[in-house]
Amino acid sequence: MSNKRVTIYDLAREMGISVSYISKALNGHPAVSERVKNAVRKLAEERNYKHNSQAVNLRRGSARTIGVIVPQIDKSFFSEAIAGIEEVCSENGFSLIICQSHDSYEKECEAVSTLIHQNVDCVIISISAGTHSPDHLRNLQANGIEVIQFDRYIDELDSFKVISNDEEVSGDVVKDFIRKGYNRIAFIGGPEHLTIFRLRKKGYLKTLKEAGLPILKRFVFDDSLSKEQASAIAANLLTLENPPDAFFTVSDEQALGVLQAARALGVRVPEDLGIVGFANESFTGIVSPTLSSVDQKSKEMGKRAANLYFESMTVKQRGGPVSVKKDIIKAKIISRESSRRDADKPGSL
Image (cartoon, rainbow, N blue to C red; front, side):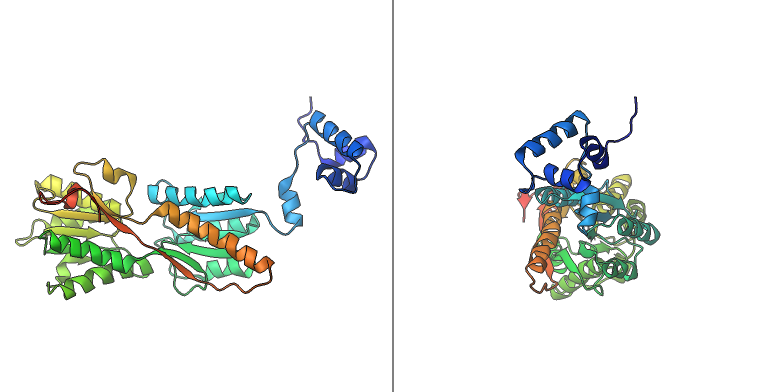
């Protein structure tokens, strides 16, 4: 038995009519009689013919596909964002191609090249930690592919951006620490060439200054995104004569590293040390003590990014101008055990 896929040409040959007429019959064209439509559909079903929507879409100049590039799929922040994107794409009859960069600029460029060859209509991307230049993203735009950045982004690229209020919410984290009596607050950040990490650091420094607290350079670290790096930094600082009494980190992986270092040194959390991370990863609510974190509403962020594409596409189809904009989704602090002293009540701030 042959496993060869039945094509529209096979149907046309068997019925003795043109390919274009078969296509019209399958698509319910009014110029084709109901008798012929029924006969074509019956034969298509008998021969197990599958409509090649990709070929049709390519002829229309659209693959009806959105590409997504994220640093790591296994992080709940990014998986939730992808779920939001997929939900909106499904509502609009679009498919997804998902790639991960593993925080590598080279892998991100490979993903971009793949998506160009797949003729995607749009790429929704969260930039890798190793990316300094937007040239590969401009290559997407040069190929007529819309680019939408979310969470991590490059300011210099003229594209839609869906982001958090990073500076503001980081300041709120520091204010909350101070309100709870923590005043020697250390900071573990990310690569400063990425805007979100600069803004989180700016919010931290600005709020310390406004509160009249000293900014201790030995308590401030950049470009230390991994759990292992954060753990090593915390282990070193917690053995100082005057150690920090709180850590604000720009990721939950870092916060977990700080927690592990504190546990190894016998430092009590939150009595002696407060910890707050960023992204509200799924593990933050199940470790002990549970980790306070900033919830960026990642699924909402993904949905908004996808909706921006479909909204702009509608405007273009109507001949209207599309103004590139930056959408800010307000994040919130989720207060858990790692920053909650006895007087605090559980819940979100």
